[in-house]
Image (cartoon, rainbow, N blue to C red; front, side, top):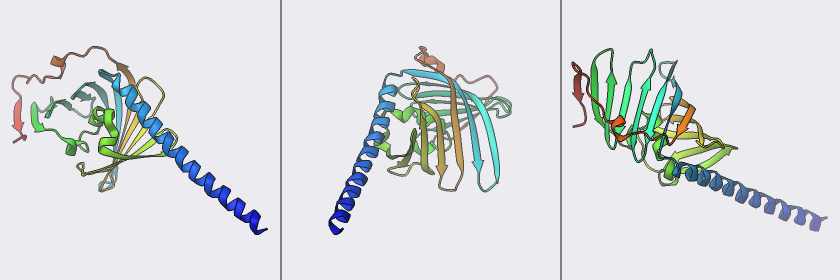
Length: 213
């Protein structure tokens, strides 16, 4: 009887360790496949929907719009009404333009800004392991924990898919309990976006606020 229990215990421990190894391998495979697909993408454009759950205000804000991204680090996205805002990032410079108010805000962009402009995380898919510790909480969903301070971001979740563009949704949780969920739709890849498309041209009569200093 004791011998039988020992065999069962050894088998259980082996099965447990093998399961952990298999799960870890599957995480590596998912991340590797995601980054492999991303490496073949030079530019992308599509539509997005964004839901922001604001804990302290106890409210949910919903927005839609379209986005454009070109490697290595050029981005442009425009929110549809009622949010009157367009954001343009090129290298480390950011413009936020509000047409109805005829105002433009110039700021510097870095990884601390991801919580303000979370869709910019799409530009970092090429080397996730450099910035995050990654686990897979369920099939097709990766949990990313920043290895170092990254603004107010606490956790990022990526829902991956097998399509050419490997990301379905991005979910960000910040240290204050707020949550932003972004879903990508109708994504088109490698359409030949020109660099000039990501150069902000200041409309006449626009008031500029330079916050980059």
